[in-house]
Structures are given as structure tokens and as C-alpha cells.
Image (cartoon, rainbow, N blue to C red; front, side, top):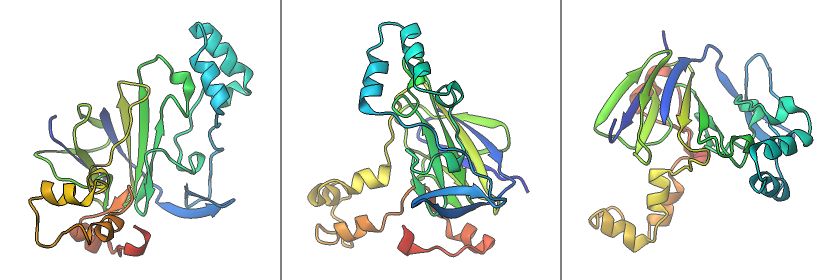
Length: 240
């Protein structure tokens, strides 16, 4: 069976899907949470940068000066290369949850991207996983090596509707693309604003909004009960 992604968007970042032959398993190492293949292979964490180093890179007078400074920080095989493997990103920018994680390279964690106008993310999705959680009018199914376009700012999600893990790659047109979670951001607003925007539903009020907010799962979230049942996966609400 080919793993595939169901990509939905309000309109029509580039997403490319590919099956992942090796299931992902949760691990704990040195007090940090990450992912690794079942064969135990791990990657070396990507370098981190101090505020002073980032400022020096951003204030360099020319691209040559910038690259020379980055080169002076250490092994060029570390600073001019970004490892998207889950094990190399124990605290991923794009989120980590029960169903997988998203590893985003952008100007703050890979400053060699400065002034290139690009960034990229790789998502590792276990079976029945939704990267975000809202349905939208346009739906596309991606198989291996296929892609789709999602305009900047559009609400979208990726869903792995198979019982095998999958990987997707997303490219961005800016080296600092930002990240916004629709459900988390919306319910993070003041209670009266949330209830008003929803038309004052009877099941929700300003008293239980904090409780409801706490139940929103972290990205990447497990979703679609039919898929969970089909794949024999039990949802653990306590992990979010």
C-alpha cells in the first residue's frame, strides 16, 4: 500500500508526498524527546546559534562576509547543511505530537538561508495523522513524488489516510515563513471573542473555554476515527 497525503486548502508552499517504509517510534534520550527509526539510527542534532552569532550573520556587509563568518563557527558540513531527520531535531519548530513531527529550516535555525528567499519543512506523519485540523473546500490526494500548491496564509491540513507512516516536504517563498495553528490560535483568544465569533453556541461559554482549549491536541495530531479504527490505533487523549 502506498502512503498518501490528503491535502486540503482554501485556494489551490509546495507539498511533496512520499511513503515512509520505516515506522517511527517515540524515544527519550538525554532528557529530550525525538523520533527514530525502529533500527535505532539517529542523526546528530543541528547546530544552535547564540543571539550574538545571529546578529553578526544578519549584520554582515555582504554575502561573502556572511558566509566567511558562518564558516568560522565550525565544521562546514554542519553549518552549511541542515538535517531534516527527526532525531536531528529534538525540539522541532513546526511541532511534535502523538502522530509525528515537523522539522522546519528557516533563517533563525539555519541562518545560511538569509536573503535566499526560501525555507523548507519536512513532516513525518504516522498513520491516521492530521498535521492541522480544519476541513476546507479543495481536496487533493498526493502519492509518491507528487505535489500541490498552497498559497501563503491559506488554512490547510495534511492527512495520512493509510496505515503506514508517510513523509511530506514543503517549500516556502521566504526564509522566515512563520507558523500559525488555526484551532490553537483561535481558541487562544479571549473567551468572549471566541463565543461571539462562533455565534454564542450553547455548548461553549467563557467559563469552559479554558478547559476546551486545553483539550486541543498538539500538532501533529491523531485524527479521523475511521482511520484509527481501521489501523488499530487507540487515541490517547492525555498526551494531547
